[in-house]
Length: 154
Ligand SMILES: CC(C)(COP(=O)(O)OP(=O)(O)OC[C@H]1O[C@@H](n2cnc3c(N)ncnc32)[C@H](O)[C@@H]1OP(=O)(O)O)[C@@H](O)C(=O)NCCC(=O)NCCS
Image (cartoon, rainbow, N blue to C red; front, side, top):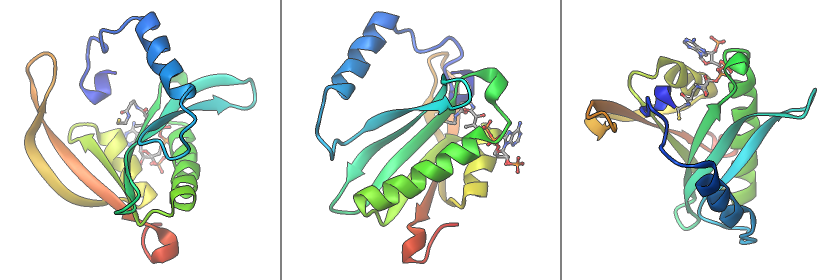
């Protein structure tokens, strides 16, 4: 979690996480405001990371997404790009979205480069937008992508 500002982790227990995930998994609402997905290496069935959408707004046709390739030996090998490409197509189609938003700490160069490569456009940078648990303020870059089927994106 260091790249996303939590150098000492989130400070939650496995039991707390399991409870949170169970609540999500057991919620059958097909238009749930947020949902998390596990990225799996199909060669060996190993879970290697997660994708999530949140702030789903069907009226305005938008949501916000996030990604983590959690297994360090899987980072930098194209899995972030591949899984995010599939995820964006899925979300645009499934919820008939006009746009998808994303943000990153300005010092997270890997994430910023990935989002640019995927076709996200920078909309604004907020200086000192978020303060991490150690008290360090971080600039945050906000980006968005319009639905390629409506003429935006990749
Ligand atoms: C950021 C992250 C999602 C990128 O996924 P990844 O699988 O490691 O990246 P990929 O191998 O798919 O690379 C895709 C692009 O990302 C960028 N990138 C990846 N590694 C990079 C590095 N070490 N330095 C700079 N840019 C990098 C490049 O633009 C790359 O395209 P290229 O290979 O054509 O140059 C992943 O490293 C990660 O989960 N990091 C920790 C958590 C995090 O920062 N999440 C995002 C913010 S919530």
